[in-house]
Length: 471
Image (cartoon, rainbow, N blue to C red; front, side):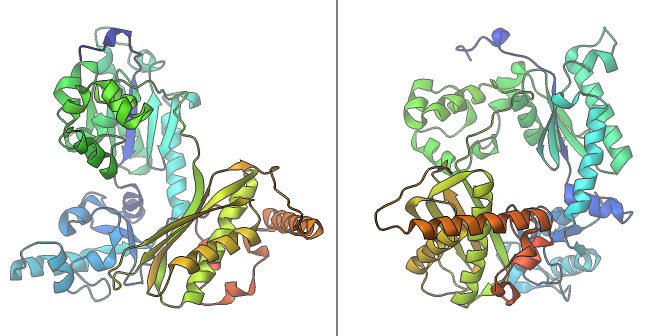
């Protein structure tokens, strides 16, 4: 704390607004149900016993002890019969008694399991954006995700709350309460708000670590709260930007709390982590140089796509069909960005029945972005690493970008063939841009293993991974 003069740090009136259990709440509201009192989860392929839980209502989480993302086979009941499942319940580590079994079956029969409707969630998001725009200019609003967003209320605070006897902190809370009320009136969605009269970071920390636990679902952190609130955050991973891997590296340096991080010599952190180490030190001390109008945008390190398959894929041929489709999708995105990749990577996640580690592999290639070339590299890498086993998750990514104009030719290359393939790919891309990705497909799209047709029907890819490249 002694290193920083907070009087010289920038100050803005920021509200960070999060829609509580957004997808599940939208489904409840559309059915005339209270989102807080209804047990509901949004599941990919709701008729599939091995579906992915994409979102769930607060009551669902409370009753079944589940977070948003999980698998249906992790629930303590069978989603088809709604009967208690002893094997699944045992995995939750809860004492299984007759009363617990009766409790689970009671709620299982009253739980709604619904498929995702991304088009509807986008509609609701637009309604919420209209509420934001009633209190701030468009350039004062920064969407963080489909259900979260920052609003800089510095310019409008005195306009909407003109009472000069109130502090800016009180005004910010009052205006945030009005926005919170309007979101509920317009959409039926309950929101949580973290606020700060300092910067976006403190607003985000206030939301994650206090607002969700208060009766008003609002909390306001300032520079004066750094020692008492920021440093009191229980776990390193509860702090924005710190995941399990980074936590482990901090532990190796003897840093186990945010307070210890804040009081570590920043030179030591820079030596261990580079620029990120210094940023961590500033953040732990409540200092954030970013703002809503010029948000920090990390440099793109790669393009990728992943999906969880609707069933276990045992046949190598079927797995390769999906890999080829994904390699093509990402290659399509690569060409739209006018880039070529020099690194290809794959991720193969096995079914739970296999009990083996996932495959993570990558290889360097000559700069490329043509579908045929990228598919060849992806399948070659897969065949080097895969031997057998049921697969449930697949990912493909490209990195090490260079400009699309860059190319290497050797004396052994067939220049005419290369030009022919370039022209063919350009023609295919043009047709797809005009008539849709499915306008031109290989015959494998008609096989049971293919996922292109199914995934092209989705919006946002929340049932089966990202869909960029299919549009």
